[in-house]
Every structure is written in structure tokens, then in C-alpha cells.
Image (cartoon, rainbow, N blue to C red):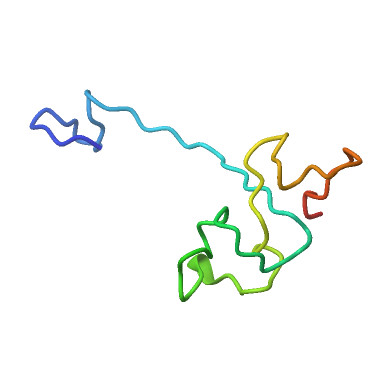
Length: 84
């Protein structure tokens, strides 16, 4: 939030606006623990972010788009799935 001397008493700022957004990260079901540079919670870290476990369901490839080349195989069916 921007700082200025014209803040209201309830902490609002007339020059800025904050908004909550939901972000969904889609990882592949298998193979777990793949290190292809797509998962910022694991790649390049000795200890994963957010207390996640190496080799766990959140350690897979992060799908970057509906036509992510990693997820599409020759038969066109795809191998990335949403964890249910």
C-alpha cells in the first residue's frame, strides 16, 4: 500500500486499491518430484517453500498453459491432471 499523509483513520489510502485474487496452480499427478524448472516451490531450493514435501503431490511439473508441451504426448491425450 502506498504511504502518504492523507490516509483516512481506518487505514485506507486514497491513492491505492487492494484486491484479493485467487491463484490456482496445476501440477501433474505423475511423475512427482520431477525437476524441470517449472515449479518455483521446489526448483533451486534446498528446502521447499510452504512446508511442502519433496516427492509429494505438489512436487510435480507446474502446467504453464492448456497446451503445455510437457503435458501433451503424441496421442494428444495429455499426461497432466488436476489432483482431486
